[in-house]
Amino acid sequence: MNIAVIGTGIMGTGIGLTLLSKGHTVHCYNRTRENAQELIAAGGKYFSSPAEAAKDAEYIIIFVWNKEALYNVLNGESGLVMGARQGQIYIDMSTQLPETAKEEAKMFKAKGADFIDAPVHGSKAEARNGGLWIMAGADSQVFAKALPLLKEIGETVHYMGPVGSGCVAKLCGNHLVSAIVASLGESLVMAKKSGINSEELLKLWSEVDFRSPIIDGVGHSMINHEFDVSFHLRTMVKDTELIRNYSESIGVPVLISNIVHELNKVGQNMGWGEQNASAIVKVFEKFAGVE
Image 1 (cartoon, helix red, strand yellow):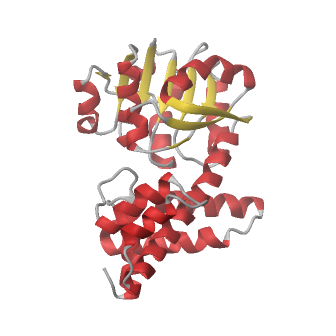
Image 2 (cartoon, rainbow, N blue to C red):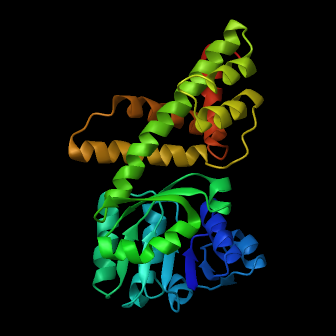
Image 3 (cartoon, rainbow, N blue to C red):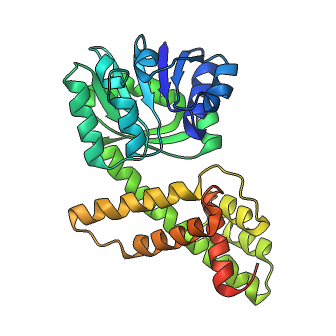
């Protein structure tokens, strides 16, 4: 199967590598060609525009950082919308607002193409081993057609409803994740300043009824001050901003998320935006006067 991957950052590269490993032909585009080198070296074919990469593809996976980057690959003579045609399915796996997904669907429908918003939970490792958790918004028949492909890159795939529903599910999930990461950092700093063994505390948390892969993985990152990127802190800032914007649009107070958003911004303003999101622990260390 011929599949295009538009956006070869951490996640797009991982998905492209997974697809190559399963025998698919992968065409790719990224605004900065250098960021596509790993995928090219593995057998992906690079094109100089989104439209060229998507031209002969049955499925086009979009994985870009924000709305501005999305519109850059959608619009213009070399953009995806201009070249879209009947028979293609465009799958936006980026984290966007539901209204943005609905706008995309309308653009592609006008060209006869189908659309799915299918953001994911998971990060670098899951993208590279086909272990993502996917939540999809689409017409049910379009979803059924794309499901075999989604299963190749996802450990689980969840149909959430019509277009935009995948984005809503992702924002709800990121609300939860961002709050857990911030609370974990605050808890570990409290433990550190109290003088107890943080490793033993993580071991305890892995055994009790609130055990979680997030607590285990992010917790060790925080304790060891190892902030190699699987999910940038700056991306967490972007996502908590989206949560705030969406919740405002539907009249739902998200008090916890608003606090976490401001804490993430403090970390970014301290110069840690290019580090992993777990670097938020350094904000609490600064507040508490410990490391």
